[in-house]
Amino acid sequence: MTDPTTYQDRELVAMIHAGQTDAEKAFRVLYNRYVKRLYLYCLKIMGSQATARDIVQDVFLKFLIKVREGEIIESTPAYLMTIARNLCLNQRRNGRIEYMDLEDIMPATEDHPYETKDIHAHLQTAMAALPTAYRETLILQIYGGLSYAEICEVTGETLPVVRHRISRAKQKLRTLLLPILEH
Image (cartoon, rainbow, N blue to C red; front, side, top):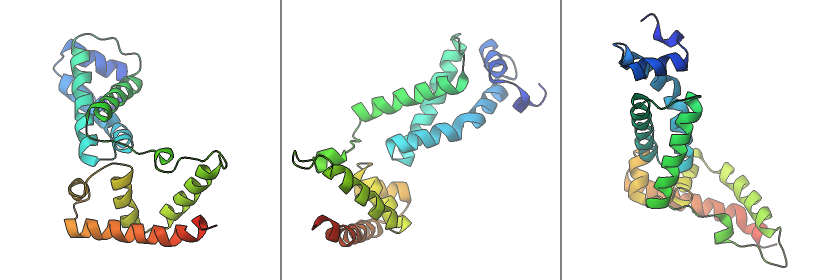
């Protein structure tokens, strides 16, 4: 095999399917070509680095099995993303990760249907004003649905640090949003 990175996806998939001696190299090239994109997608959907990594591993395992079984793959990136999407949806449906929608927290009233949109815009602005470490930790808790212990695992921080960051983030949000919400 010459430089495997010069091969097109279809050629690499064909090499894996045929079980050629360079099949492992071909798989590695496809893995390196798409792992970052898949990881970022899974991370955005799942909100957990560990979960995203696990799902990406499952994506490539399923891909390898399907290729070896002779599945026809027209577009490797689309095929991989479809597997990733389905695994993320299954994890969200069957796993512990639950997401809260702003509508569930603060539903719009009949008198003010645009109230939620305004509050959401102010909330986004206030979140952007938080220091990065506070914002990341709070997003993991609120939008990722992670416990303090899980946040510690994702960020590598200790429990007291995570609790402090979440507490400070909520205080800062309260300070930023209170004048707006009182009007």
